[in-house]
Length: 556
Ligand code: PEP
Ligand code: MG
Image 1 (cartoon, rainbow, N blue to C red):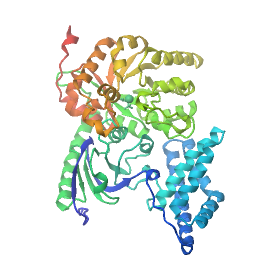
Image 2: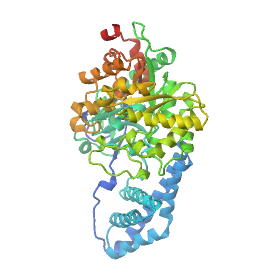
Image 3: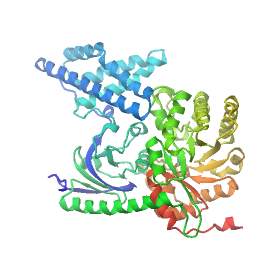
Image 4: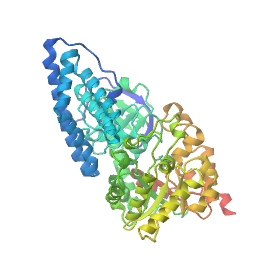
């Protein structure tokens, strides 16, 4: 195969390796168009028809994109999720909008982009001012449509991130959870982002999907354009834009070696239990958020699913999902792990994750506000729908229930009470195990109280680090403070294990998936970890080569 090169100048950039692995592909620079200024220009009457046909073309393009997205989402999630896109498509088919766009264009003699902005802003406002919440929701659909039309007018094909062409290297300033819902390993082979945080949500997603990712690259947007060939080394943080022949050859040979190492790890992982050199068994489970991840985890030799994140399901829905819809989603997604143990985490939203149908009010300090269990306590119907679904599904799967962002005893006891009541109503006597996520210093320091209410603990080291080190996980400006193996974090982990006594403790934060510090983590006394699905083989191989000691304080 002849190496792919182009004639543009080769540029090497250094960032921080966020998700391991090597990739080569074509850059797609992702900017959220709603937040970009598009040029306003005045047209003369001779150009009216030209601008009108640009609008016609953009509408056709967006309609086609919506139909493709609907089919895709129906296959991946369900019919209800797909209906959103079909409803949006029908808004564009309404001739009133088109006539309004053309009328403004003729009257104001401004370019198509400005016409779209003006008309859609007006429509969105009108919907939002209506009394009926169902109509208010339409405001978001109108914004979405405006975004798609502007992308199409600017020549960027109006697709969601999932419909990117194969072999894409996605280049973004920052990816929001709602963007990443649609990221797929079928198309995206690498991610470059200006964020540097190891625990930023997009970083987690890249690792879960096994997509190499480099973050914290200054001058990224000045150096790369859509279509550039890019090599990403997620292990070293090295990025080469428009590589010359020798850089491409070096990449090809490194990739062959990497693939061989990967294949060896996979073989070991499937066949062997993760036992350290001195004979200590470690349970290696996986973090997952979709059927794709669950399958990858089980094929990779995971002992179970230590953390099944449910946010993508709730974020991709435009209405409050029913318990039946959620149960269907769980059955479908967890199928590859049937027979193994699975922890389903209750919806962990708030802060930067905000489903549009909840209309959560803006908060001054979102990460210190209503997140995780606090939102579920404020919306008990949302909690109840999830618990009903999980209890129903627990008849066919071995499930645990994880409560996110626990701080007080009530955060757990309210959930436990509702589980008991629902179980009685549903005639379920064999209850799922109930676990609390330990993600805040307050929870870590009150394990001796919390343990009276739960069957197990799972340490969420991403949030525990954010709140202990006072360094936002999504904030690149303080990434040097986001040290998830800092002595204070290791001390908290030891304290949690110690105070938990006979209650099992595992870790499902990103700290457990880093080969280079695995021994340090296991030496705190942790014997159960849950890591990104794609990392299971690698981490199991590392456990096999690791020697750990029984901590002194546990021997006594
Ligand atoms: C964590 O905080 O470590 C965790 C596992 O939860 P999430 O990353 O989803 O916030
Ligand atoms: Mg967390």
